Image (cartoon, rainbow, N blue to C red; front, side):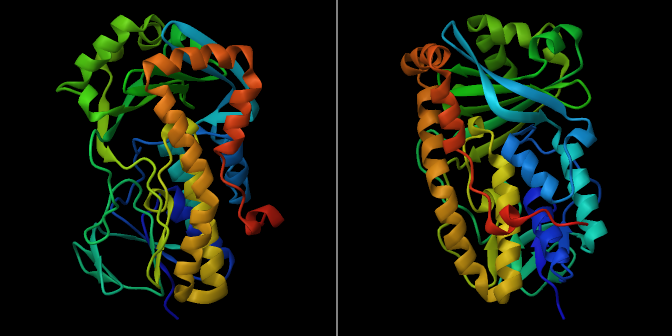
Length: 367
């Protein structure tokens, strides 16, 4: 029997592969890279994400992840610090994706290496050959494949920018136990320590803010935001930076065709300030596997409708929070209010979480 074909061996694809293999299937993971890389997006794992990972046999603490207990907000000279509802973690995508891929392979998935260039007639068109399976699970993250591009709103599109800062004693003292959000006109920067002591700076901003060299923008932001400048330190200019364009924040796939399961960012793209992107990837993979195991490839539309129902409200609320965060006249008063009434922020944190899929809530499967 032909097993399901999963395009992309990131968190969404590996979550699907693990759940499918546990259910008796032999999924094929198709990825462009034989070795695990370090994707731009991710790095912060919420308490809900950590719980999901443990159901899949991956423990962030065992991977050396930095424990995070508080959220710090900065905007217009205002600051606020709020305790998270439960412990979260800072972990690089390299460490996370490597652990998930190893788990998927040990569960019984098979890895094939090829660059998926498009999908047509139920087959994946790779550079080396065409691939088919009993259903296609599309888990290519923020990268679209030809023929299945996601809709993008017109106007000032969002970009993602990542800066990885080397271990530094002063930065570690500032960031230890915290996830920070620095809000500015047209975007925000999230900063968290990773397992090796480096600091991951992940920014989401409007295209209009990035005029040419990203380093010029960072210089401007550092000049206007002393707290951000202190975190960047004197060594940030030597650190490598990466960018990704036209991120469709707020995208939600309501429907799909039979045989095509859209996972992770191909199913829903939540603004990164919510810290729920990896949880969406894991939840979509597990739920898609549950539907495939119950109804085969034909169950894809039912899965997509159910996942859209789960993700709709968190995406809507996160988009509203993003709009507030990137508006200077609103962000600073909101941060001041958060400092006085932290329960409002904790309520917002809960409202932007994805509800556990039934299969995950029932219990934790063994390896």
